[in-house]
Length: 68
Image 1 (tube, one colour):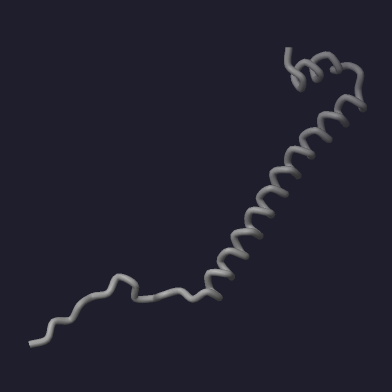
Image 2 (cartoon, rainbow, N blue to C red):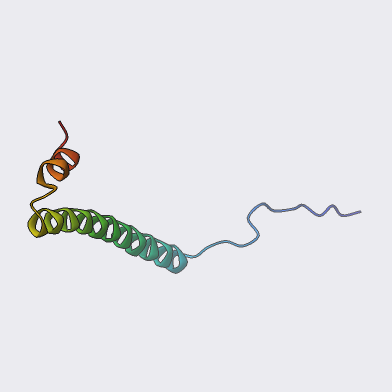
């Protein structure tokens, strides 16, 4: 009677597959950092434009942006 053993690693990855995964992780990290930077810059640009367009709300916008 033979006993079949079940292996835990049925789909081993190769070195090339690991390199592709690491490459995609690097690209995803770069993209996420660029998106966060873009959002922060858009917020600053919008606040700057709001301060330049009108003088009516200057003190309120400045206190909201820079705190008290």
